[in-house]
Image (cartoon, rainbow, N blue to C red; front, side, top):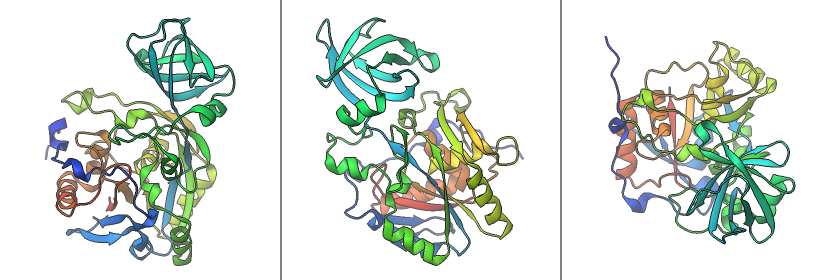
Length: 345
């Protein structure tokens, strides 16, 4: 039997604009949770997650920390406005950044950010020269923390505020480097983590620094022609050991978020899950052979997006479409600050 061939149109759906969450729920674990593991969807509150998992299951979290990656400034010479989104911190106080300006700045151009520091444009960088290579005067992470803004996704229409600095970050964020949050993990608070521990659900972490490319639409009708952005990840030996121990005891591996799933499946592309750090541009579409993850916690994703394709690959295309129809009809909140669902492979 020939596997179906999908195009981008197969991952489109109508989403009322009012369902795009502009602010987080009042309490992290007070979001809604759609259990989509059975034939019929089941509606829950996120804090009920311990009752949906079993003793001996393993939750795998992404411990990346969102940096205040957005900078506002101007060109020193002309005064033209410039907006930067720092994507990658490099050695030598250098960064790769997306720049928005009336005209692309040439090498040697000096940019003034936040009326606080200058950055020199060294040239283009990144895959296909899509970004700009900048040199900053001192430690980029320190400068961003002092002068940057929370890089809220493009569909959130308000400017970042103090509440976003706290809520667009997981409670266990540890390693700075992401320009987008691992949003499925935003629903966890300390009380829920304690309840999961008491239930006998184990946890471990890995790191994948989420890039802004996570929001990029697929612009080619054929999925085979789309090229994913590259992201850095690291799966430690402790995480590999925890997964192997869980498997041996009959527990299930539950990835918290698509970023966690991408890191785990990238680290297992050779067959067995291997510890280490690498870049991944893995593009998961229906037909993908999953090797590690049994269940997936994830938010609701954009139409025609690579993340929706990943969900469809994991849960089954028709099943995923049915769950999204239910979510729209039941008025679930969508995207980064929205609600979540639990899926089985």
